[in-house]
Image (cartoon, rainbow, N blue to C red; front, side, top):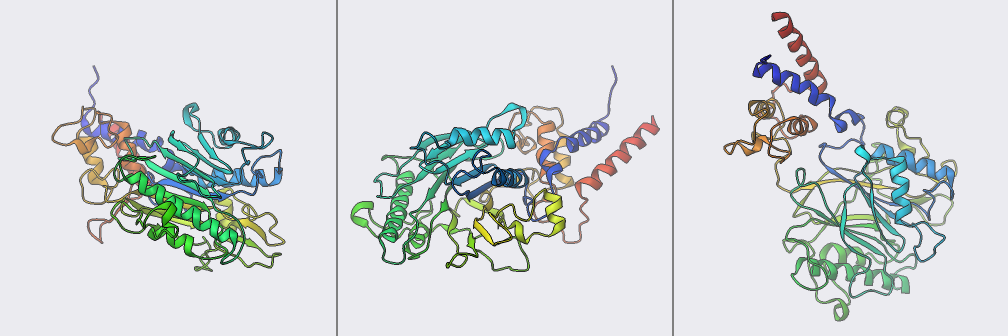
Length: 431
């Protein structure tokens, strides 16, 4: 029997761990990267009536494929797919097939889809508690709602999505504006129902909730005020005011800005330079901030990306436009990375709020063991065994958090890997 000392096992394991980190190897060094490898990435994108499919518009479909591959989101919320009452139009099954083709998942896994009218949720993770309408149902409705079944080893809670498309057009006081308000009232009432036992929908306490979509705010701003604060206008139909967050407070409007640092205040999500209407903010992501923290967020504007960033990410300048030369953008994708609030950073095994050498030592010190009752943190994967999955979680979040001391010298994963290779070679020479 060949015996390998604990230190040697640790070094070899680290090398294996570095080779197995999918997310780490996918880092681009650009604004696109997640702050933490385990952050859940959510996108909202009005894609203009089925143009993501090559048989509808091959040019736009190729752009969408590049965007999907560059953004690498976990959940896409698309608007203007279908509508699904016309059998000749695409459905959520078609979106799933498309995603399995242009963004295949490891191990032959499939994407999951759910559709309501023209809204489609497509997710790497299973979708449950599917619904297509709030109750009561407003006159204009289009809400795909689902609970995303997240991996228990990575997330302590699942995640509830409401992907909606409010009524288009019409200024303040118009019929369309009234219908947008009804849609906002209905969603606030639905979130109250979700937080309250009984009724039409029940969520476990503190389940994160997010409203995303094209809200078409071209008239009154009151529908947004309603969604954020819970100020219901038609209380006779949708009940009394109800602050929508679990702690009885307002939601938070993520309000992502464009990735272009030269225009730090750009927040428009729709633009057409040939239209009499100026660029506007029509698309939103609004979330329960009492149970969610936000990482990276931005409105993707490929037209303003540097040549280096375009080359690094595989994107092209016109990828979020219909015609870049004419300034016709239509809608832009909104990207938001989220994680549960006040939970330790995955991989922070010593509890100091930072992922570094000390956390590696916790894993290595318990290597190949069942989780020691005295130190359950050694098993961040939650599979009851300390091994490569736990190492990957630590390395996937390397340098996340705040270093214990400002002067601490923290190696990057690549340089740490070189150091370990050197150590391994030295140990071989010592044999």
